[in-house]
Length: 176
Ligand SMILES: [Zn+2]
Image 1 (tube, rainbow, N blue to C red):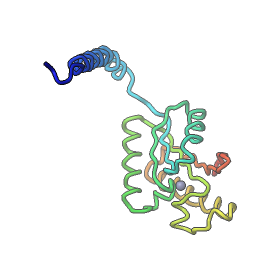
Image 2 (tube, rainbow, N blue to C red; image 1 turned 60 degrees about the vertical axis):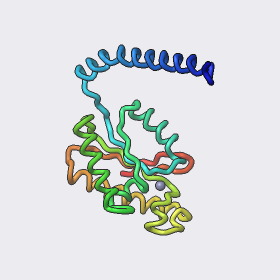
Image 3 (cartoon, rainbow, N blue to C red; image 1 turned 90 degrees about the vertical axis):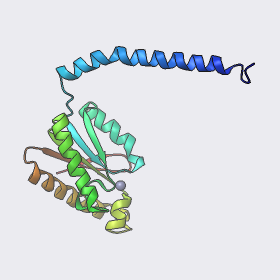
Image 4 (tube, rainbow, N blue to C red; image 1 turned 180 degrees about the horizontal axis):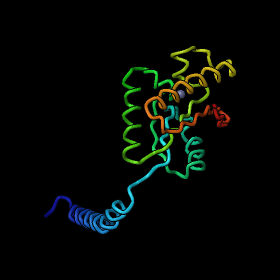
């Protein structure tokens, strides 16, 4: 007599579910494959944002509205600041690697960088009280954003680069 009379039943159900799952996956593969061959995936832009959790949802809403969901997305603490090698040169290298891949895999034409208000990365690198002077904060972010655009266009002159400073409101301020 089995010590666990229900085990067989549970196990059978699991196997059946597994099989159903495999069948569903297999039946979806041919069409996925042919679609992929017919039109390689294309994104319009590569996003670089900070990792800050407070801004992810509003940024996603903004980007979906602006770019219809067709974007690749890299998050590195400090966003534009990461391109200066914050906190380590590896972060800048990571961005360049991801940009290269995004171009080759998805043919992006543009990079969008989203810096934001009250950024802990800028506070730790520039000034712990930076966010207490909103105008100075905006000016410093603008400078780093513009330098990031120059760095990107030095390497990839054909890429457009849009710069935004996102406030806690949230409001998306375009940096020229
Ligand atoms: Zn941040």
